[in-house]
Amino acid sequence: MTGNWIRRRARVVSVGAGCASMVLAAVVVALTPSAGAAAELVVQAEAYSAQLGGVVEPTVDTGGGSDVGYLSRGDWLRYDGVDLGASGTMAVSVRVASAVGGAGTVQLRTGSVTGPVLAQFAITATGGWQAWVTQTVNVTSHPAGVQSVYAVMANTGSGADFVNLNWLSFNSGGPATGWVNVDPVKWNAQLAAFRAMTMAPAPANAVRVPEFNATCTYSHSFKDDPIVFPGLPGASHMHSFFGNRSTNANSTLDSLRANTATTCTPAPADLSAYWVPTLYDRGAVVEPKGVVVYYGSRLADPSQTVPFPLGFEMIAGSAGRQVPTPAGSVNQFYCVGGTTGGEIGRSADGNWPICSPGGTLMFQLVFPDCWDGVHLDSPDHKSHVAYTPNGTCPSAFPVAIPSVSFVIAYPAVGSTQGFTLASGMASSMHGDFVNVWDNDAQGHRVKNCIVQSAKCNSAGQF
Image (cartoon, rainbow, N blue to C red; front, top):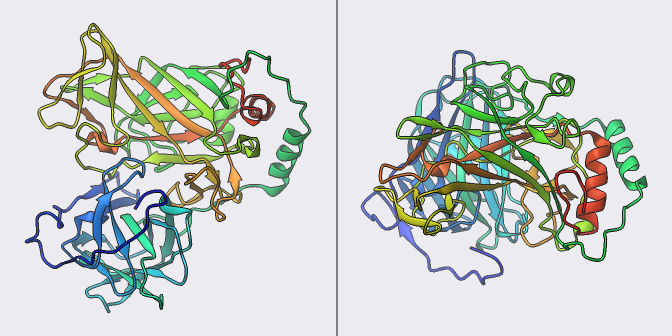
């Protein structure tokens, strides 16, 4: 459910795949990297084989689509044909939202609603029914091969709705760890230096929008992902990189800082690494003609924002999200400009816009803007951050960081055949960010532009 809507349950029971309006075709995507890499399998919540008590509803989470809501004690969702791979370690994640939290848990069990517990997640309030966070647990052993996995709602005495569920993720063969702690000494020193900075007063005619940006161009493409598959060249689908020109599978904070060549302005103040899946038009590569990385605030009080620590990493969107994105969907590709302006049609499958002749295909990808204040990264690269649900950061993610968004322009208008991404459907659009800003340069921009709500350009000037 969204916003402050009152939650009233119309209890829905759906067992088996006969009710087409409630039970959707399985949306299960396995990412199969090279030998030695972890394999991630993502299951959309609404792709159940059978269920008790849930209601499929639209979601405003990144990527749009649907979630399963109104879940309370005793409700369950069954997912058949879930391949957990070989036995060993596994990172298991759920994407959840809750306005109430409480004593509820989501248990993932194999075989039946009372079968062995694969993973368990304690649900706390996230800030709203559409304020999404990812919870991850690491298991050291699990059943191998194809399983029926049940998501069982448990351990709450009231019987009231306590959680919405968007997707499940099983990352098998990977390490049982993945949390990267911020160095508290360095972080506290960075914060102290930021707070000691003198703010440059904005002129009277300044546009009162909390924002600065980095203006970038395309750099290079590799089947690399130094966040998801570090040290494994070729393990990923194709990515288009912008920003730091040295970014590859073996990149580290030290290697990125050592390279001063970047496709972004300001250089060398911003040596950050940014990347997205490569776009194809009828099989031909379409690289971005320009990207603006905006750093802003969606908080009610932008003055609470602090800079990113060096080496901070996060991902927005999901490569495993493979659902239709018809016109009107949240977070979709759109058109600007052209002879008649904007979108003039849709692809045959309805998932892609056709732009006016001479127009430009666009996408805006928004990243989380609240941080737990402890971890530079997490096993799923999302669990250490959250989106502000209502203008304030949730209690579990109390540190307000700049709201990063990629605004990407592609020199293409499309056709009825549509486009494809290296990761699949339009809904799989995602992006990665590694912060390699100079601390002083970033700090002054956050102080001058975001904290006092004054729009700045790429040079950090009003």
